[in-house]
Length: 293
Figure: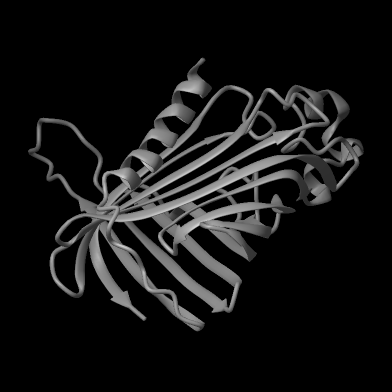
């Protein structure tokens, strides 16, 4: 039930924001490449002196977010590419070193050939991993690494609003053997942990076949305030197809001026292979330096 509620909320945010816009506003599509992106450096800091009686732990945090798009149009063909790098660190008073609070590297590529109206025959590719080892040692670079690809149909109104549907999508997961080696870990410990991102003992990969839906919507809510919604759904035909993987991210940017902005990031993930106990929720808010390129 909770999963369905979050999915409904994500879908409502994505579609609701879309139809709230002026239908008359349309992008002029021209042949060639359209490239652009931004880098946002966000900082958070809190401190308390010895006389502070309200409680609290001082901390320092920083996050860098790189968001880059490269989209091409040539006749009735389109090719959209997006790179996201999101990395954050945090250090509480009393800790010896910084630990990572966020780590995400994701690349999306989507090619399409015009069918009719806003519809395209499409093929997509997605790669997702992280750069650094987690503080508890549970993950490190390229472990796990996720890859998805498949044919489908794309509904694209503009670079800021599209939905891709793939009824036959392959998902491939790669992990490091140190996390699945039963002779080292012990079979009981491995089974008690529920496996490693769905990968079985003594293996380093997992192959899934299913259906995928990916949606993207970005809009200006008002002057200097924009919202970006990214929604990805995946159902594995080969195992528990009713357990739909959900990955929803909202980026809200409120510009103070050309270089200073306030950023709010909210992400909700449901993947029963990664965490069978429920949703993973991440929220980050801060003020920082923003550069467009």
